[in-house]
Image (cartoon, rainbow, N blue to C red; front, side, top):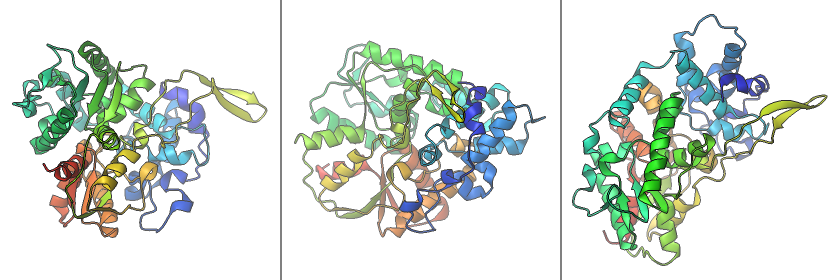
Length: 428
């Protein structure tokens, strides 16, 4: 939908500021009460969902003579974490701030007002099918010697989609190999696309490049169909969220069930097919990745308009699905941690659909390093406040940003992918 299609929503923001904080009844301390990283860092209303709605309204009503650098910062210095969308539901079910934010970014890009750093990503995608612009031929190097099937030559039951970050950041290759070992031990026929795998397209969309996203979604849908896979398993929360939310919302679907590795492992444990026998004595806390949680909730394509339904009542026709962010993947990671002997899990104050973002999403890591680091640092401090010695998550983008931030700022917190702890527990 174009920005003008959100005129009703932008003009009906009540400026309640609910989008800035977690629900008031859930606040345990002032220190960890904010929900939106952008407004928390900048402390100026324009950097909130309500402020951005006001900017979008000014754009569609023609009240702006030019797009300034500050406007571009307001539009693009947002991690697209979706927290504002969840909390806005506290006050008004008919407003969709994350959709407004997406439309606003797409509009700016269409007007040629994009971030130069994002153009590096887009050029890499167009040239090498990955967000880093690394040679495509090396995308499957991590799997050398693992004996995985090549979906270009044979059908498979399960397609393992790796994603850009894990494919080209070799620090994650051992984690990938652990996951493959678990999957193969479950007796599954697992295949990969190798050098032919391409980006899911989610980052391009969230940066405002909808056309680029559509190209990658079409390619992914065709790849899955040709593979014959009944399941697509991924370790990347960004890919999981893109497949679950963005694809359906834009009219694309995969002819297979999309499963995150935590869901896969949790299912094996519950069926008695995976035994976690080794004790892993560790005090941990768990970070909910945005695209695994609230933005991993299944999306629905809606085509309609807001109409007057009564003297003082407007509403979407046909009725628009209400997404509360509660149907993402929250339970599986916790079920795994609770099943590992010796692991002591203590929750942070902001969890599940009200989780604080890691700071790496929406193009912020690429264009606004200061904000990405500040956001990650805030989450690390929240983790430290629990008394935990390790921060566990299930997304390579979160892990990368946490580790880089710790390297820059210092600290003793350990960062683990949940697959690493599972591997230790099964005797790996």
